[in-house]
Image 1: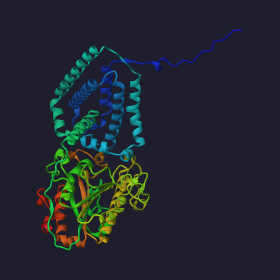
Image 2 (image 1 turned 180 degrees about the horizontal axis):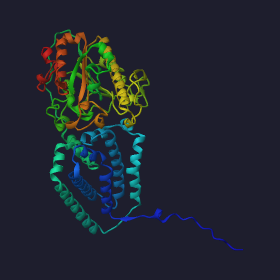
Image 3 (image 1 turned 90 degrees about the vertical axis):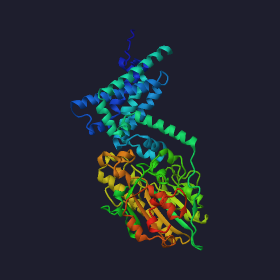
Image 4 (image 1 turned 60 degrees about the vertical axis):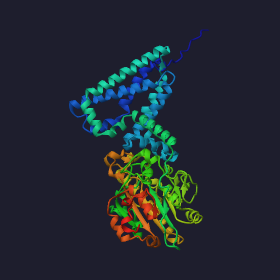
Length: 552
């Protein structure tokens, strides 16, 4: 009896192949990959600026590309070794793939402001940016290269030899980068001088540099602490027997002036406010194009005109000055916090509230911030200022910002992948979200009008605007120097009870005329102090919007 040997299937030899490479070789390949596959937004911007036109443009592009590769290599080779190569480069591949996707999808720039926004986003906000559209680029430019990376066997060398080779390679890369930049210096310097924001598109250097700056800035601010301001504040004497005053400041989120119904927008997105007839400022400029910049800035005496991020972050805010004057303050939040504006003061967050009347698994309606407010204020006699920080029109999930009954403009974009929707659908969903803010403000005003225990007023102002696809831009956060007006022009609306206007001597007809003049976030700090009749050395009457229409 013979035994027949059965053949065993064999895998192709290439499946088990594991190439060998040095750290320097892998760093070079990664640098080439990043320059070619993760910088589409940068190359588009360079082409739009005319830097790549004609034969000269090809030479300029080649010089820029060579410089980017050399600089990336110098950075990678400086921090990678055979132990850290695979884990660190894997993280870089995945993060860079995601960063490149969002830059191309929404037109964002990864400067320090945007990185701060990302770091301060909670799980809900971050989740809204995650979609199936991220999966293909993440797999193609993140996961697949990472899997190939882990197949590589890193060449081991004595540490002295490895160090010597590394120093030579880094030095050579830096020399090569310098020569490449010098090769088209006039063109490249003109491009960077006229389009400084483009440096925030070079990936992964953009987010790595910005992340480092944020870390150093935050560490320095913790060491410095916050400088007191307005400690001399006091309330001007008022006639005896008058009611205490209550001012509610509603900080809106992502509502742009162009779509605000009271500003003459083609469709009425503020019907309830229109019936109330508040004072509406039609030409208002935001301090920043992101919450991280605008909110601290508008509550600071320094503002955009003397913008100094370190000084603003390192100083106390309007709320501290009010507290020094004896005015109780309260910050109620349906967002990601007060950005240190209310640090050390009364603060309530409703971001993760579970009240079924206002909240679901996707978050809470801004109306939740009105719950229990009257009772909270009743326990605190005297003048008070309450800040309500809205979720408002926070994108890209505009369709989640309004109830079904306010879905008046159709068809709508009912996904967070804005690229899958027409501009009409995006604008319709965005405008429906403004209807929700309109309803929230109207309800707030009605509640204040019904409460006769205080003379009440309300100021609404949005923190920044939003791009809805104009010029390929979406969302917000473009560097302020180049931010379009869609991101920097915001609505500002005010309401005063008859008792408040009378006790303050406020001429509303005069104020309506003043509302036609240009205004900005810079006015808020001084206008609130003037409205509440707070005397302090940090008050600037020329920036007080009420000064022309009310006694000092």
